[in-house]
Image 1 (cartoon, rainbow, N blue to C red):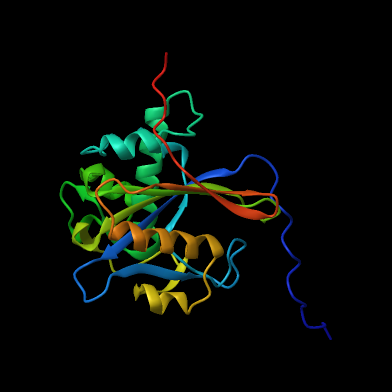
Image 2: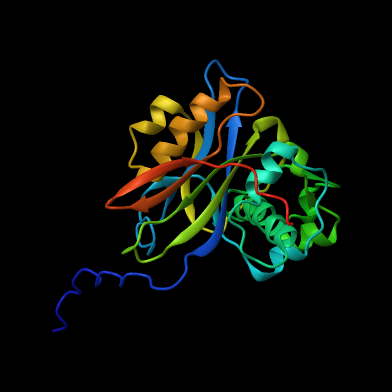
Length: 241
């Protein structure tokens, strides 16, 4: 008789430079209190299993190829370029934006912050939408945070967080890729009762403050040092000499 399988072996810590990633925080500001689009990761996921998270994921090599619509404010663009090491910084910045919009569509079915035709009959997958003329629209997005996963985790990411309001939702496709479950809209207090990654809690706290701030709020950068997360404020990237 075959013995029952034991628990899976713990994943080995990730080594090497953190992978580039992007997240999109979609906020419904029309309700009596703001609500955020979130979902729960699969319990068998290697990274953050069973946690409630914002939609998002790894930047793919082709994400920087797509030409975008609209533009960020000078405030957001200068800070988004901060810390970009790629020789073509503008292409790298485009890749973050595309990854955030693409991953949100793939994980939740919500197509957010794009221009062009958005019809359900071309919504089978992201490449089909791109062929139909969909382009992420930077004018509907705000850059709100950057965070690097601490060392010792099974995956490490250098993630840019963007925000869009719910009126930027163009379409909701009737399928997801299975990465997230329990996808829905949660108020700040309600979602805080769920199992959240520590960085998600910190970004939510900053986001709540930013919603009540002026047009150019602080953009935080979270990184790990001496056993704890540190919070810095991003400043504009200096122009090349």
